[in-house]
Length: 100
Length: 205
Image (cartoon, rainbow over all chains, first blue to last red):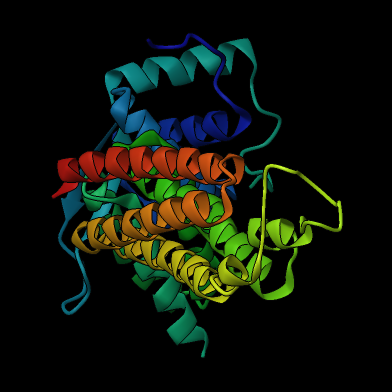
Protein backbone atom coordinates (compact mmCIF):
# COMPACT_ATOMS: atom_id res chain seq x y z
CA UNK A 1 0.00 0.00 0.00
CA UNK A 2 1.67 3.28 -1.01
CA UNK A 3 2.27 5.73 1.81
CA UNK A 4 1.54 9.38 1.26
CA UNK A 5 4.21 11.03 3.37
CA UNK A 6 6.41 14.06 2.96
CA UNK A 7 9.75 13.51 1.22
CA UNK A 8 12.71 13.29 3.56
CA UNK A 9 15.38 15.97 3.63
CA UNK A 10 17.66 13.70 1.65
CA UNK A 11 15.03 13.16 -1.04
CA UNK A 12 14.34 16.88 -1.23
CA UNK A 13 18.06 17.52 -1.72
CA UNK A 14 18.15 14.99 -4.50
CA UNK A 15 14.99 16.35 -6.12
CA UNK A 16 16.41 19.86 -6.04
CA UNK A 17 19.72 18.78 -7.58
CA UNK A 18 18.09 16.74 -10.32
CA UNK A 19 15.40 19.30 -11.13
CA UNK A 20 17.99 22.06 -11.58
CA UNK A 21 19.06 20.31 -14.77
CA UNK A 22 15.94 18.30 -15.43
CA UNK A 23 16.72 17.13 -18.96
CA UNK A 24 20.28 16.16 -18.24
CA UNK A 25 21.23 12.61 -17.32
CA UNK A 26 23.23 12.49 -14.10
CA UNK A 27 25.58 9.84 -12.79
CA UNK A 28 25.43 8.56 -9.24
CA UNK A 29 28.84 9.77 -8.11
CA UNK A 30 28.21 13.23 -9.53
CA UNK A 31 24.93 13.41 -7.61
CA UNK A 32 26.77 12.36 -4.47
CA UNK A 33 29.26 15.17 -4.83
CA UNK A 34 26.61 17.76 -5.60
CA UNK A 35 24.15 16.83 -2.86
CA UNK A 36 26.62 15.72 -0.21
CA UNK A 37 24.71 12.49 0.25
CA UNK A 38 26.74 9.38 0.94
CA UNK A 39 26.45 6.38 -1.34
CA UNK A 40 24.64 4.42 1.38
CA UNK A 41 21.90 7.04 1.35
CA UNK A 42 21.86 7.98 -2.31
CA UNK A 43 21.44 4.55 -3.85
CA UNK A 44 18.55 3.33 -1.68
CA UNK A 45 16.91 6.66 -2.41
CA UNK A 46 17.42 6.29 -6.15
CA UNK A 47 16.05 2.73 -5.98
CA UNK A 48 12.91 3.89 -4.20
CA UNK A 49 12.40 6.81 -6.52
CA UNK A 50 12.85 4.59 -9.57
CA UNK A 51 10.40 2.05 -8.16
CA UNK A 52 7.88 4.86 -7.60
CA UNK A 53 8.31 6.24 -11.12
CA UNK A 54 9.98 9.46 -10.01
CA UNK A 55 13.33 8.69 -11.61
CA UNK A 56 14.27 6.91 -14.80
CA UNK A 57 17.59 5.19 -15.28
CA UNK A 58 19.59 3.97 -18.24
CA UNK A 59 23.09 2.83 -19.07
CA UNK A 60 25.43 5.18 -20.88
CA UNK A 61 28.55 4.20 -22.74
CA UNK A 62 31.74 5.62 -21.20
CA UNK A 63 33.27 8.77 -22.61
CA UNK A 64 36.72 7.26 -22.30
CA UNK A 65 37.54 3.85 -23.79
CA UNK A 66 38.38 1.19 -21.24
CA UNK A 67 36.00 2.59 -18.62
CA UNK A 68 32.83 0.75 -17.60
CA UNK A 69 29.43 1.87 -18.78
CA UNK A 70 27.72 4.07 -16.20
CA UNK A 71 24.19 4.20 -14.90
CA UNK A 72 22.57 7.58 -15.44
CA UNK A 73 19.46 9.05 -13.87
CA UNK A 74 17.01 11.85 -14.48
CA UNK A 75 13.63 12.85 -13.16
CA UNK A 76 10.49 11.69 -14.90
CA UNK A 77 7.60 14.08 -15.42
CA UNK A 78 6.12 12.77 -12.17
CA UNK A 79 9.43 13.34 -10.37
CA UNK A 80 9.76 16.83 -11.77
CA UNK A 81 6.24 17.70 -10.64
CA UNK A 82 7.06 16.44 -7.16
CA UNK A 83 10.28 18.47 -7.12
CA UNK A 84 8.42 21.67 -7.97
CA UNK A 85 5.71 20.91 -5.44
CA UNK A 86 8.24 20.28 -2.68
CA UNK A 87 10.21 23.39 -3.63
CA UNK A 88 7.08 25.53 -3.38
CA UNK A 89 5.96 24.10 -0.07
CA UNK A 90 9.28 24.00 1.76
CA UNK A 91 12.31 25.23 -0.19
CA UNK A 92 15.70 24.07 1.03
CA UNK A 93 17.99 26.82 2.39
CA UNK A 94 20.98 25.57 0.39
CA UNK A 95 21.72 23.26 -2.49
CA UNK A 96 24.10 21.10 -0.51
CA UNK A 97 23.99 19.77 3.02
CA UNK A 98 26.21 17.38 4.92
CA UNK A 99 23.52 14.83 5.42
CA UNK A 100 24.26 11.15 5.47
CA UNK B 1 45.24 -2.72 1.45
CA UNK B 2 42.62 -0.02 0.91
CA UNK B 3 42.14 -1.25 -2.64
CA UNK B 4 41.60 -4.81 -1.48
CA UNK B 5 39.23 -3.79 1.30
CA UNK B 6 37.28 -1.46 -0.98
CA UNK B 7 36.79 -4.15 -3.60
CA UNK B 8 35.77 -6.66 -0.94
CA UNK B 9 33.17 -4.25 0.43
CA UNK B 10 31.86 -3.61 -3.07
CA UNK B 11 31.60 -7.34 -3.76
CA UNK B 12 29.67 -7.81 -0.51
CA UNK B 13 27.37 -4.92 -1.36
CA UNK B 14 26.56 -6.41 -4.76
CA UNK B 15 25.88 -9.80 -3.17
CA UNK B 16 23.62 -8.25 -0.53
CA UNK B 17 21.47 -6.61 -3.20
CA UNK B 18 20.47 -9.98 -4.61
CA UNK B 19 19.07 -10.82 -8.02
CA UNK B 20 16.21 -8.32 -7.84
CA UNK B 21 18.60 -5.41 -7.57
CA UNK B 22 21.43 -6.87 -9.62
CA UNK B 23 21.38 -3.98 -12.06
CA UNK B 24 21.79 -1.52 -9.18
CA UNK B 25 24.75 -3.56 -8.01
CA UNK B 26 26.33 -3.14 -11.42
CA UNK B 27 25.53 0.57 -11.27
CA UNK B 28 27.34 0.86 -7.93
CA UNK B 29 30.33 -1.01 -9.31
CA UNK B 30 30.48 1.33 -12.29
CA UNK B 31 30.46 4.38 -9.99
CA UNK B 32 33.10 2.72 -7.82
CA UNK B 33 35.44 3.33 -10.72
CA UNK B 34 34.64 7.04 -10.54
CA UNK B 35 35.12 7.05 -6.77
CA UNK B 36 38.44 5.28 -7.22
CA UNK B 37 39.66 7.93 -9.62
CA UNK B 38 38.48 10.56 -7.15
CA UNK B 39 40.54 8.96 -4.39
CA UNK B 40 37.62 7.89 -2.18
CA UNK B 41 37.02 4.23 -2.95
CA UNK B 42 36.75 3.00 0.63
CA UNK B 43 34.19 5.57 1.69
CA UNK B 44 32.11 4.89 -1.41
CA UNK B 45 32.30 1.12 -1.02
CA UNK B 46 31.44 1.24 2.68
CA UNK B 47 28.44 3.40 1.90
CA UNK B 48 27.30 1.04 -0.83
CA UNK B 49 27.51 -1.90 1.56
CA UNK B 50 25.52 -0.02 4.16
CA UNK B 51 22.90 0.89 1.57
CA UNK B 52 22.74 -2.71 0.35
CA UNK B 53 22.29 -3.98 3.89
CA UNK B 54 19.46 -1.51 4.41
CA UNK B 55 17.82 -3.03 1.36
CA UNK B 56 17.96 -6.58 2.73
CA UNK B 57 14.57 -6.51 4.47
CA UNK B 58 12.95 -5.14 1.31
CA UNK B 59 13.40 -8.22 -0.86
CA UNK B 60 12.65 -11.85 -0.19
CA UNK B 61 16.17 -13.14 -0.69
CA UNK B 62 17.41 -10.55 1.80
CA UNK B 63 14.77 -11.48 4.37
CA UNK B 64 15.70 -15.12 3.93
CA UNK B 65 19.37 -14.33 4.48
CA UNK B 66 18.59 -12.33 7.61
CA UNK B 67 16.41 -15.10 9.04
CA UNK B 68 19.12 -17.65 8.27
CA UNK B 69 21.62 -15.68 10.32
CA UNK B 70 19.11 -15.09 13.14
CA UNK B 71 18.34 -18.81 13.39
CA UNK B 72 21.90 -19.97 12.96
CA UNK B 73 23.49 -17.50 15.37
CA UNK B 74 20.52 -16.84 17.63
CA UNK B 75 19.18 -20.33 18.05
CA UNK B 76 21.49 -23.11 16.87
CA UNK B 77 24.74 -21.75 18.27
CA UNK B 78 23.32 -20.96 21.74
CA UNK B 79 21.71 -24.39 21.92
CA UNK B 80 24.98 -26.04 20.92
CA UNK B 81 26.88 -23.98 23.47
CA UNK B 82 24.41 -24.83 26.21
CA UNK B 83 24.58 -28.54 25.45
CA UNK B 84 28.35 -28.81 25.16
CA UNK B 85 29.24 -26.52 28.05
CA UNK B 86 26.52 -28.04 30.17
CA UNK B 87 28.13 -31.43 29.86
CA UNK B 88 31.72 -30.28 30.14
CA UNK B 89 31.31 -27.75 32.93
CA UNK B 90 27.86 -28.44 34.32
CA UNK B 91 26.95 -24.85 33.40
CA UNK B 92 24.39 -23.46 32.84
CA UNK B 93 22.51 -26.70 32.87
CA UNK B 94 22.98 -30.39 32.42
CA UNK B 95 20.13 -32.64 33.25
CA UNK B 96 22.52 -35.51 33.51
CA UNK B 97 24.36 -33.79 36.31
CA UNK B 98 21.07 -32.93 37.94
CA UNK B 99 20.04 -36.56 37.92
CA UNK B 100 23.41 -37.47 39.34
CA UNK B 101 22.75 -35.12 42.24
CA UNK B 102 19.50 -36.88 42.99
CA UNK B 103 20.96 -40.00 44.50
CA UNK B 104 19.22 -42.35 46.87
CA UNK B 105 19.37 -43.46 49.61
CA UNK B 106 20.97 -40.18 50.79
CA UNK B 107 17.50 -38.73 50.64
CA UNK B 108 18.31 -35.86 48.31
CA UNK B 109 16.17 -34.90 45.34
CA UNK B 110 13.31 -36.57 43.60
CA UNK B 111 12.36 -39.97 44.92
CA UNK B 112 11.10 -40.93 41.49
CA UNK B 113 14.69 -41.02 40.25
CA UNK B 114 16.75 -43.93 41.34
CA UNK B 115 20.43 -44.13 40.57
CA UNK B 116 22.74 -47.01 41.23
CA UNK B 117 26.04 -48.25 39.96
CA UNK B 118 24.56 -49.77 36.82
CA UNK B 119 22.83 -46.72 35.46
CA UNK B 120 25.47 -44.33 36.76
CA UNK B 121 27.84 -46.10 34.41
CA UNK B 122 25.66 -44.96 31.50
CA UNK B 123 26.23 -41.28 32.29
CA UNK B 124 29.50 -40.88 30.35
CA UNK B 125 28.00 -42.44 27.23
CA UNK B 126 24.97 -40.21 27.43
CA UNK B 127 27.23 -37.22 28.02
CA UNK B 128 29.05 -38.05 24.79
CA UNK B 129 25.72 -38.22 22.98
CA UNK B 130 24.81 -34.79 24.28
CA UNK B 131 28.11 -33.39 23.05
CA UNK B 132 27.41 -34.95 19.63
CA UNK B 133 23.99 -33.31 19.73
CA UNK B 134 25.64 -29.97 20.41
CA UNK B 135 28.12 -30.47 17.58
CA UNK B 136 25.21 -31.42 15.34
CA UNK B 137 23.58 -28.08 16.08
CA UNK B 138 26.79 -26.29 15.11
CA UNK B 139 26.82 -28.28 11.91
CA UNK B 140 23.25 -27.25 11.13
CA UNK B 141 24.12 -23.60 11.78
CA UNK B 142 27.12 -23.79 9.44
CA UNK B 143 25.21 -25.55 6.66
CA UNK B 144 22.31 -23.12 6.98
CA UNK B 145 24.66 -20.22 6.35
CA UNK B 146 26.28 -22.16 3.53
CA UNK B 147 22.74 -22.74 2.16
CA UNK B 148 23.50 -26.43 1.83
CA UNK B 149 20.06 -27.70 2.76
CA UNK B 150 20.88 -31.28 1.86
CA UNK B 151 23.53 -31.33 4.57
CA UNK B 152 21.18 -29.51 6.94
CA UNK B 153 18.68 -32.33 6.44
CA UNK B 154 21.38 -34.93 7.10
CA UNK B 155 22.50 -33.18 10.30
CA UNK B 156 18.90 -32.72 11.43
CA UNK B 157 18.19 -36.42 10.97
CA UNK B 158 21.33 -37.30 12.91
CA UNK B 159 20.26 -34.95 15.71
CA UNK B 160 16.84 -36.54 15.78
CA UNK B 161 18.42 -40.01 16.06
CA UNK B 162 20.67 -38.87 18.91
CA UNK B 163 17.74 -37.25 20.68
CA UNK B 164 15.69 -40.42 20.28
CA UNK B 165 18.55 -42.44 21.77
CA UNK B 166 18.81 -40.02 24.67
CA UNK B 167 15.08 -40.23 25.19
CA UNK B 168 15.05 -44.00 25.34
CA UNK B 169 18.06 -44.35 27.59
CA UNK B 170 17.13 -41.52 29.91
CA UNK B 171 13.62 -42.81 30.41
CA UNK B 172 14.61 -46.45 30.76
CA UNK B 173 17.83 -46.04 32.71
CA UNK B 174 16.98 -43.12 34.95
CA UNK B 175 13.25 -43.12 34.88
CA UNK B 176 13.04 -39.35 34.61
CA UNK B 177 10.93 -37.90 31.85
CA UNK B 178 10.65 -34.14 32.38
CA UNK B 179 14.11 -33.12 31.11
CA UNK B 180 13.69 -35.41 28.15
CA UNK B 181 10.25 -34.02 27.35
CA UNK B 182 11.70 -30.53 27.41
CA UNK B 183 14.48 -31.55 25.06
CA UNK B 184 12.16 -33.39 22.70
CA UNK B 185 9.82 -30.39 22.56
CA UNK B 186 12.75 -28.12 21.77
CA UNK B 187 14.01 -30.53 19.12
CA UNK B 188 10.58 -30.72 17.50
CA UNK B 189 10.46 -26.92 17.36
CA UNK B 190 13.95 -26.83 15.82
CA UNK B 191 13.06 -29.40 13.18
CA UNK B 192 9.90 -27.47 12.31
CA UNK B 193 11.89 -24.26 11.89
CA UNK B 194 14.59 -25.97 9.82
CA UNK B 195 11.93 -27.55 7.61
CA UNK B 196 10.25 -24.19 7.05
CA UNK B 197 13.58 -22.59 6.15
CA UNK B 198 14.40 -25.43 3.75
CA UNK B 199 11.04 -25.00 2.00
CA UNK B 200 11.54 -21.24 1.84
CA UNK B 201 15.01 -21.73 0.34
CA UNK B 202 13.46 -23.69 -2.53
CA UNK B 203 12.14 -20.38 -3.91
CA UNK B 204 15.69 -19.26 -4.58
CA UNK B 205 16.98 -22.53 -6.02
